[in-house]
Image (cartoon, rainbow, N blue to C red; front, top):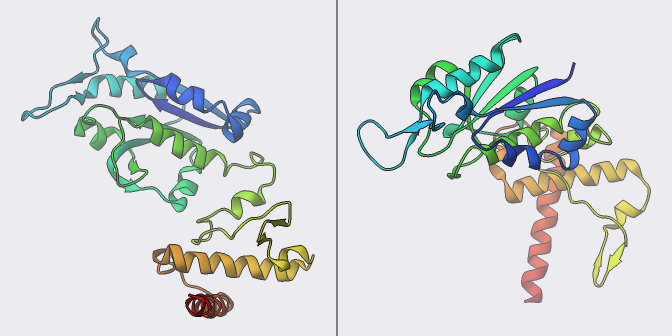
Length: 256
């Protein structure tokens, strides 16, 4: 059964146009998933299509009203199983790959893209099943966050990528970063592809890739290593990488 995704947004074309390209576009055209849009302006309840109002307590900006958003959800839920509703706000939990995989389980996912100063808290409290953020910064609206989440989810679905193993080897799958990638030619100026990748020894290649992935994570995102329990074989590879990195750093210092 194809997954269904619905975006509640004031700017459906912004999301729709971006989703027609690449992996997501192919997944939709092949029927692996279905993408719908609901514009709260269609449920504004006034002739101007106004969906916002001034905040209680004063202050700058406007706040998205409950009624148009709730009516949008009612239209989505009519005649179909209850979807899982996600509010996209800076106050939500920060998205990671584990969350992406969890969200991908839902047959019907609704993403509510906020605008202006935000969404009336009563809608978040009663109508949203979860609240997610894509990072510790503020965007002009939730549409870009919706695109990020949809792209991350759809590429994990079966038969979407050319090789399902590609998703399993991505950065953050298994809790660590990806290894370095190379392609032809084998040499560009003074830069060469590591010899192990040219030798055809698949066991050696797999070992090198795992060591590089662990080492990169140690160097660039050590916080990720703190969240997982490494097996003894991985710890040995990581120590080997660290020794090699320190030797290389020492050589570089002597060269200077």
